[in-house]
Length: 133
Image (cartoon, rainbow, N blue to C red; front, side):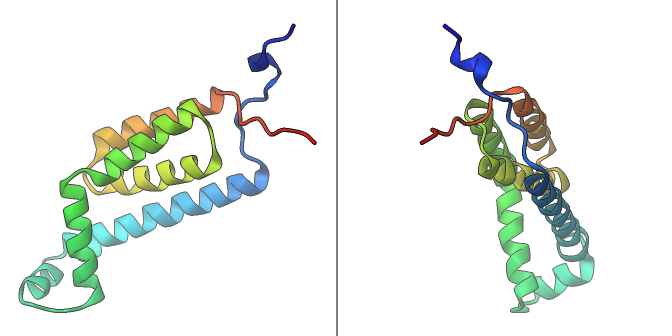
């Protein structure tokens, strides 16, 4: 009898899925960089928001600041990466990738870096099994 692990192919996204992951990673990384350097660390925006400006940028700045102060990006990336390591799936990989990109840029680098390593390690795991009819 063959073991089920030996017959299952490893988790490798198709070419189309890889393109989606690359685009998602670049958009997440770009938006995180934009938020950090144009909304969070820019003094004029900070003063305007503290002065009572009611703009979408100030609301986004407040939300993102609260999230990165509580390491939400890092923990989300780590949980998604661990779940993906246990049971590889493209959706978990996407969530982990996006959260890790935000976490690395927005000061959650330790947890997000660990999550990125686990995401890469998940490529060595067997992929999901789909029943044939």
